[in-house]
Figure 1 (cartoon, rainbow over the protein chains, first blue to last red):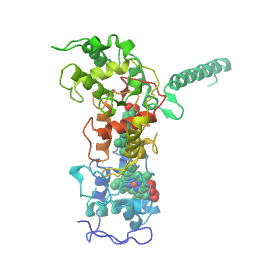
Figure 2 (spheres, rainbow over the protein chains, first blue to last red; figure 1 turned 90 degrees about the horizontal axis):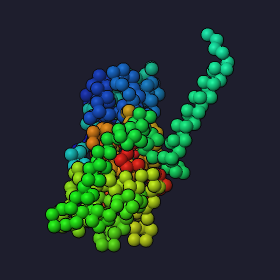
Figure 3 (cartoon, rainbow over the protein chains, first blue to last red; figure 1 turned 120 degrees about the vertical axis):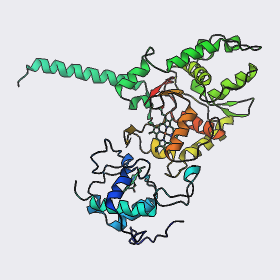
Figure 4 (cartoon, rainbow over the protein chains, first blue to last red; figure 1 turned 30 degrees about the horizontal axis):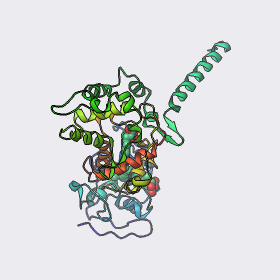
Length: 127
Length: 262
């Protein structure tokens, strides 16, 4: 079961978990190709990663551009912001077609992972 | 440092000629707004494909050539019915998948070969088996350079319409359609992988990532797995329909079998 979320304006102000996000863990999940795999589409200030994809915008500085609530919505379900986006929803299980059996019924990331990545992206302020 | 003007002008002209030649080479791999996967490759990989002595896929073509004239016990060889492949198979791969009168639906080249295996009183060859890839590559090679031209009207129309629908349907945990990558993100980078138009004019392809040949259906399954979607089995009507639509998207592109891809 997913934690219910409430969208307010263009964000989700309420964290999904009581435990505050752990930015160090969030950085690891974002870079891991079996977990967030964010680098397949985005650049982030992660020096040990050799290459970044460019399907999505460069995320360097995103912590100054967006609030935690805005980042949370873009991770949970970016289609609520832009129905045509190619960015996957990381915390959604409904309305998907032919999900591989190994992943069926599960969100891409757990609620705590989302909070950890939000905490990490809030630290990504400068270059 | 000052260089003599004449020398640098000659250098510039030569460089321009080199670029023009390279662009002319690529022009053969473009038709209207359609661009072969070839045009997205690094020059070394392109050179590997076009040099038939170095193209690793040619091993399968050679094996296919051998199998073409092997008569199975109690049956006829391919050559027994079709004679010289250079004549009888010319243009065939450029027109597949195609509607089949016997089966009453659209089939692809591998399925046509297996239909002939039945006429040879032989069991069907397995998908991705060395023999099926070899025969498909050999038959495909006979259309080298010919423009892709599949029929999408008449009895193929339904298959085509289903293929288009599948192509545009978001799928998998990542919720992406074929079109989301191969139409909207052409040229963008998925990490180190440059997304091409996903054209089907080179199959079966030698894919360096696989270190072997693979069929068009293996490629579609690979893309399905990338978005964490449930795959269909190779040879399923869903994949044949998708293949027909994808092949039509590349109408006019030259057959490149066996293409070399990353």
